[in-house]
Structure formats: C-alpha cells, structure tokens
Length: 108
Ligand code: HEC
Image (cartoon, rainbow, N blue to C red; front, side):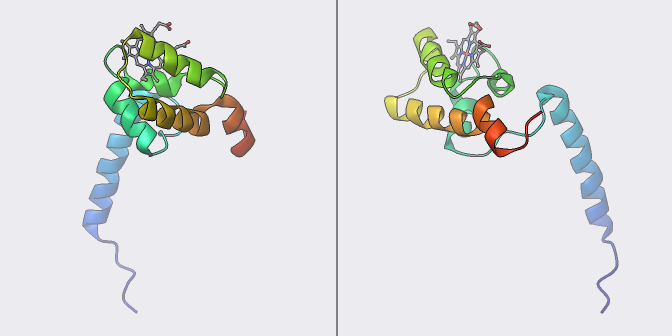
C-alpha cells in the first residue's frame, strides 16, 4: 500500500479554505452556517434588500414568532407568494426557532 503521501494541492486547498471560513465567520459571527434548503435560497433572494440575510440568521426567535415576523416583512414589502411564505415559515421554524433548536442540538 502506498496511499500515505499527502498531496500538496490538498494542503494548499486546506489553507485557502480556512482563510475563506475566517472571512465568512467575520460577517456571520454566529455559531453554525445556515442549513441548506429551499427556504435558505428564498431568504438569500428575498430578504436581503432592506437588511442583510445575516440579520435573519442572527435573529433569535421562537417557532411562534417566526411566521409573524415573515408576515410583517411581507407587509413591509418582502416579495413572497403564499407558497413561498409557507416554505420559508417551515424552514425558519425547523432550523432557526430557538425552542426547536434547543430540543435537537444541546443548547446553552
Ligand atoms: C421591505 C424591506 C424589508 C424586507 C424585504 C425584509 N425586511 Fe426584515 N426588517 C426590515 C426592517 C426595516 C427591519 C428592522 C425594523 C424592526 O426590527 O422592526 C427588519 C428586521 C428584521 C428582523 C429582526 C426583527 C427583530 O425583532 O429582531 C428579522 C428577523 C427580519 N427582518 C427578517 C426578515 C425576513 C425573514 C425577510 C424575508 C421574508 C425580511 N426580513 C425581509 C425590513 C425588511
């Protein structure tokens, strides 16, 4: 077996990746990166006009508060069809609600 050699490209890619992660951490400053999903695409597309999408990910809201916030953002001018609103509500409640996250991952 001769699989023990470390490819130099892999090492360079690791350094570049670490630098990119550092830059992302500066803007996000929250713990984990957002969970991928259709709701995440919608947030990045529709919720970044008036504030950055990061303000959405940084908000600490419960599963009861998120749908009300989405509705209030639509009232302010966020463009979401009723189906998209439902997708976003489901995503926010499943991935960002403080009460749901506490149930899944061990909270602080
Ligand atoms: C038309 C402009 C606009 C769009 C589009 C918009 N927002 Fe906002 N959002 C605001 C303003 C203005 C504030 C700050 C005022 C406030 O907190 O009430 C805010 C604040 C927030 C907050 C913080 C609220 C709090 O109580 O801490 C969250 C969370 C949020 N927006 C989520 C979203 C989401 C999710 C979307 C996409 C559906 C979105 N926003 C799209 C205008 C907008």
